[in-house]
Image (cartoon, rainbow, N blue to C red; front, side, top):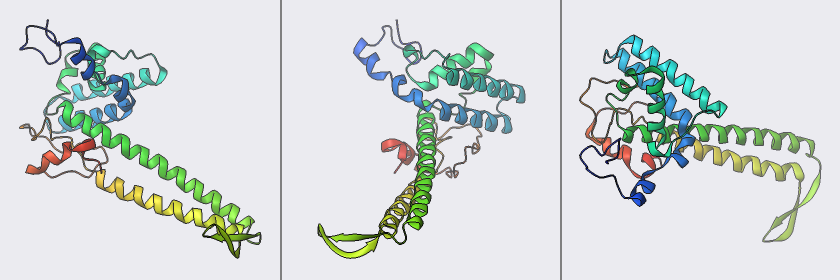
Length: 235
């Protein structure tokens, strides 16, 4: 018996070790929020382009919201037989809304799905880390003000040197955090391009447009391959 998802041309199922290698749900289940957000954006684009009906788009969106709620509550059943987060979400969506769920996959592939999910996840993580660093800086500045007159030895080459204040010492770490935030800002800018629409590798023949995921849209050029580089083109 072949694999139900992609092995239609095979008379036998893959070897057990190959099936185990292909399963990624234990890892990419953490991308569920990004996968659902990207799917909602893709459905909205398909409806706007007249590829699916407005009713389909509404049902897809409601179904995805239900899945998001189920995962958040811990009632969603992740199935290793479905390999990854994309197929787990799509299978559950099919249970909830029927054939319309299959139309969500029009003009996209699991390739551009995972690249999009990964970029969204990294972008969300960068935003969270940046907010934490900003809070850290504020705390340092507040404490530095409290200790503007607290004298301590400065150190160079592991030896005491000029006297400084503890406030001055703390502000050095605030500046270090500022440099880190700048690096994250640069990384965010470079990864903030949408792979949606690149499909399996070299775009889709459907009359698609950019989906609203907060990304900078990537022009439809022969450069789609760069979207599938190491780490999904992030970096």
